[in-house]
Length: 269
Picture 1: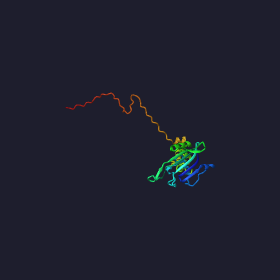
Picture 2: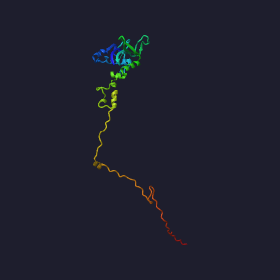
Picture 3: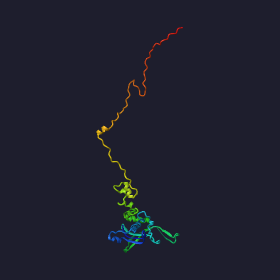
Picture 4: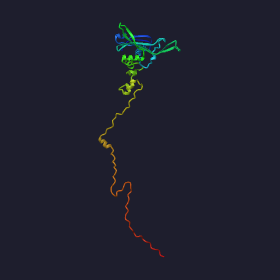
């Protein structure tokens, strides 16, 4: 993409109409946008991004793009002329804004956002003319993405790095890098650095690196306690007279013997 001309009115810090001729700036090569804080350096890049895609990088809403210093009856609009893919295009955008109206009950009316895309053509008589291409947001975005070959997010990241999301888009700088960036980065720590999460990475737990003590074979023989003997169950004895387990032994009855019973003498009569 090659920028030719930019015109803004009541946009950002610019209360009036301002023109930027990029053809004159690039005639000598590279150029630098330099100025004090709040002079409007970032607003020029925001105007280019707003003209192309209807939004600005960062988290700022489009209805806050109007300058607070502009008169109430001055409309906000941006016109960008550029070349891409062999085509010279001119796009005009206006954000959603309010303006004084005598017909409105409260004295103010709201104008919706508009877009107009034109393409420069050369007639047979070598006259340049701007032919309308589209006047809808969806059609304009489709034409811009086809000409540039980049969607809005990729184009914004490659062209500018807004302050609101500098940590999310560009990553931490060496001076403002969180403590997790020191040394080697773990997957969780690098993810926190890229997304700008305020939560620092948790320190790793210290693990003991001491190895268990090693003893020689002689020391083991002298200090090791002898193992208790293994107790194996005794097999039961076999035979006819072997008693059974958990059963008291019984005695076999012997033969009976008869002995005479003594008789007492009879008493005298």
